[in-house]
Length: 383
Image (cartoon, rainbow, N blue to C red):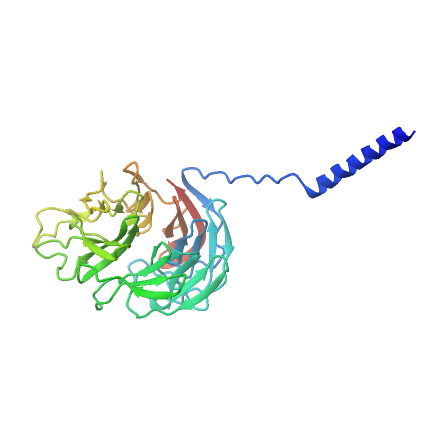
């Protein structure tokens, strides 16, 4: 009898232990991975806020931040309209799930334009009625905004370079000045050394692993003169703090460029020959490619004739893939794929931006005569 009781007690003890283990160590929950999007266009959830024109769109590596933009009624094609009030609100898109989350409102309106993601913060310009205001930063982790003072008020671009935010002058047309650098961690400002190119316009600064590439066109030359104004280039070495002048390129565009992982590419199609008066004798391409660090220039491989661009000529760069003039350029395969508008898209597709290797188009405008209606639809393109 004692033996039976002991066995029963042991069994009961074991049963209690198993029950306790079941309570304290539940089976792990298996989270299904999102199904990869097929190639081509697919729809995402609608933008959750009021439709707008030209919001700032910045990829963080996980989300596409979409903030601000012009809230005025749509401006008819070829018309000259006043810029309206800038939106204070924004949302973040997860391109894997196609869903949005709303962000805290900024204290001021965020002007249409570009931005940069550095050290967990998205930087952009505040502004109303197309007048640039102060520099703003949005903390993704804290969902909070900050207002930052800039040493001067000259027109500047925003460029992410590691843990630094670089603010190069967009042009020297409004005066000379240094390119600024903000150490995001310390909040301290510094200046880049003077570059060797001199007074320039259409200035771009493109970070690469071997340094920051500066391109631009000389102010002393005028496009349409007896010779073309070729894009010039210089490379900044971060360790030594010195510039190296690179050979001049063979292109005349220089309005957009991106590091693809192999080289710096401006995928702008087409070109110009100077016209009937003071012609240049041949056509010079708008786009081209620069190898880094030697700066050897080459034309775009197999460049086709431009198509009608769904975004009216705006160009977005995103690493391996670039969107330009109605095509997707694959810099690995060196191929051009015609890119049609999204299915059921409005007459004018909204602002595009790369989210990794996916192109996201937000909103757009339908036209009935001179009356325009904005929508909040969102599409994602996978090359």
